[in-house]
Length: 376
Ligand code: SF4
Image 1 (cartoon, rainbow, N blue to C red):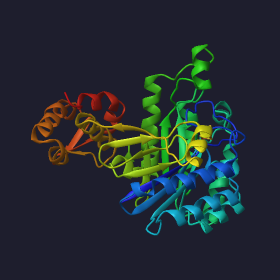
Image 2 (image 1 turned 135 degrees about the horizontal axis):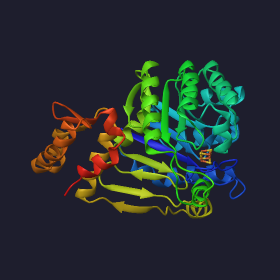
Image 3 (image 1 turned 90 degrees about the horizontal axis):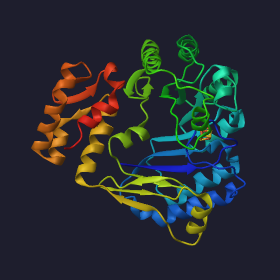
Image 4 (image 1 turned 120 degrees about the horizontal axis):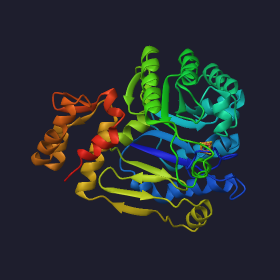
């Protein structure tokens, strides 16, 4: 089992908080970029030794590609790679790009899951974040996707936006709960160095919300989505039964994936990660010249252990001590049990058999707990 991720590094404008790698299409025309992605797939197809079950087009904004570019990308990828066993094919879209022609093109290409950046259903929040759509447009886009035959729609949200209150977040969740989306990803707004948001905080234009309010917003999110029938299956992810993201779940389970495109990452499922350059021009020139220039990182046993602790604890399935023992030895398993014990008695972790997972209270301090469970 393996996944393929394709990074489409184009956005029409930059959102205030965003530190994903993206540029405007004039840097390198999208048509040329698509050609390079196919070239890279040809150069690297031997790296995939297992059947590919998930395909994910992320960005950036993949929906900025024209229908012809999308068709070329998918049809040519199918020629180069064996995509016959794909079970989940996701594309990220922005609400302002969604129209019935796009939805039809996506279904014809075999897309069966759409992930849309909605971020808020409050126009003040959306303006602050410099999103290119209103709440109404986002709701219309959800309706268009559903009526057009996309039966698995995921939406991304951000909470903790300056100016947002518990009441306004509750109103957003109210409206969200009435939509018929199958999956929600929700993140606390983070201030990443180099973003406009970071600079705004540096010069005192905005202030981060308090930790107490962030915890209250997260708590409200969990409660409201639970009432609406969503299962909280990963720290930031909620799904209706049967709609967990297979592609993202494979990241948390250590399944290999091949990342194509500028800034894309890959993992061989054992101990090697590789990173393509976050530079469209350099990426295109290299790949068109017949070379791939990913940087490789070889994970030590200790890094693999710590990564397993972090990734497994992110999910509701949790960290199984038996798996730790199988991969890292009996002493590693004993160390986890010893270090986890105070968090279980403190109500931050729960333990079922020998599997540890976070309580809702524990998620609020998950980074601290995870770092305590890391290798000595
Ligand atoms: S649309 Fe997405 S990738 Fe593009 S700037 Fe906004 S958040 Fe970043």
